[in-house]
Amino acid sequence: MNEVLAVPATVAIASPSPEVLQRGAASALGLVQSFEVNDDMTYGLAAEELSGIKRKATSLEEQRKAITKPLDDAKAAVMNLFRAPIAVLGQAEGILKSKMLGYTTEQRRKADEARLAAEKAAAEERARLRAEAEALAAEGRAGEAAVKTTVAAMVVAAPPAVPDAPKVSGISTRTTVEFEVESFVALVQHVAAHPELIDLLAANETKVRAYVRGLGMNTNLPGVRVFEKQTIASRK
Image 1 (cartoon, rainbow, N blue to C red):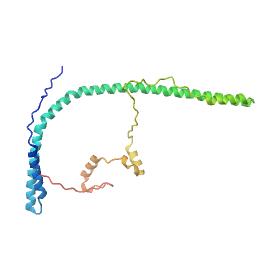
Image 2 (image 1 turned 135 degrees about the horizontal axis):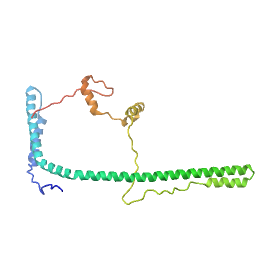
Image 3 (image 1 turned 90 degrees about the vertical axis):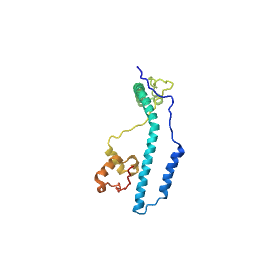
Image 4 (image 1 turned 30 degrees about the vertical axis):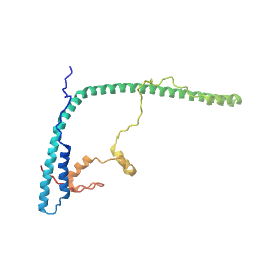
């Protein structure tokens, strides 16, 4: 039984005036652009203004969420409604594609096997004819030997009798070259010996950051510059 999803046909939004929003933000920007921090008093005033800016930004964010949250909730409900059946269809697609690829792979294997068998048979026939030509030449029958040699050169493999996969409208098979790293250590060692391949590697910034945070300024990693960076934090 399908669940009924109630989605309003229209959504009323009490949107504030864009001009008012921009005017307030521009006013704050204009003030700080002309503000100079040159002593303890102006530093304190800057801190007060920073808190005020944070409060204004928080207020705007709350107004934004009041408008977008109902829309986000409705979208999330719709996405959840369709997510499961779409995933099931994706699973069905994957299974069917896997079976179709299995069939085309088997057909290709049979064709390759038949081709190799035909090439082997042709090679054996050429060898047999050349052997007969050599025997005829040894008997002094040069003319017949020459004919056998010519015939041997003309022997080629017969085309395989196994057909390719059927051609179906809208269906195509694409071959791509993929890879997987079986030994990252071996790859790193190879790149170390061939610096021109350095772009094949990338530092794991998450783990490097955790390593640096653990050791701080005592970190010693060749090729990594560790430095202190100061930021200002402000409460609302």
